[in-house]
Amino acid sequence: GDSVTQMEGPVTLSEEAFLTINCTYTATGYPSLFWYVQYPGEGLQLLLKATKADDKGSNKGFEATYRKETTSFHLEKGSVQVSDSAVYFCALSVPGGGNKLTFGTGTQLKVEL
Amino acid sequence: NAGVTQTPKFQVLKTGQSMTLQCAQDMNHEYMSWYRQDPGMGLRLIHYSVGAGITDQGEVPNGYNVSRSTTEDFPLRLLSAAPSQTSVYFCASSDVEPGQGGAYGYTFGSGTRLTVV
Image (cartoon, rainbow over all chains, first blue to last red; front, side):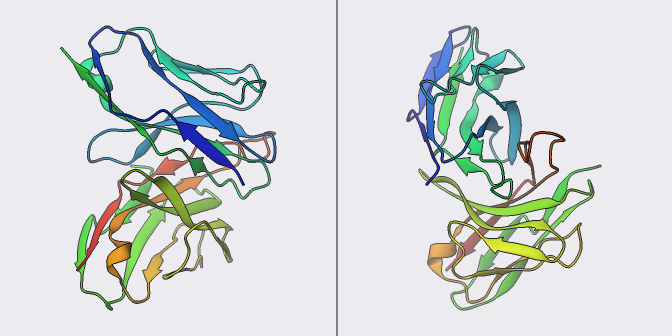
């Protein structure tokens, strides 16, 4: 079946540090890939997405590139802020699968001053 | 404001009780889903719907029922609550991205935190 594997957290960084959260996937079809963010006490928000190989999704300084050859979709940000502290989820959706999302287990990010 | 509205935000149930978690969206989205979020397990799909009158099971459907009589509403029913159903429940909706065959981000509600004692 389809699955998503994320690096385990929590990840603790100093403000302005470089962030990478690894995400790899297995899928039966040609999936679309997503990063969602969950701030404390809130629901999930779509952060960025990519729908085909070599696409780069970007938003709020975050980027991720769809790498079909390595089945990866790593999240990066050049300079994190305290306000980026949240839980980040990688997810995939396979066309024709009822638009269902398969999530990774989430990676908690804590950014300190 | 447009979006996905879930009620209630918090609920405590006794084992064996039944209840319905409400979910409504005003974006005319065809696709709606229910997920549960548990520590260390991410979000797991309970049930989903691809349009009014059409529902299907997800990864963890046991103990839950759904129906979709209108495009806007997608209630989740717990038939006989068990402590294993203590979780945070999220409802989500999406539209199909034109030309992409179903690859579009979901809009999530703010969640219902359920405790079964």
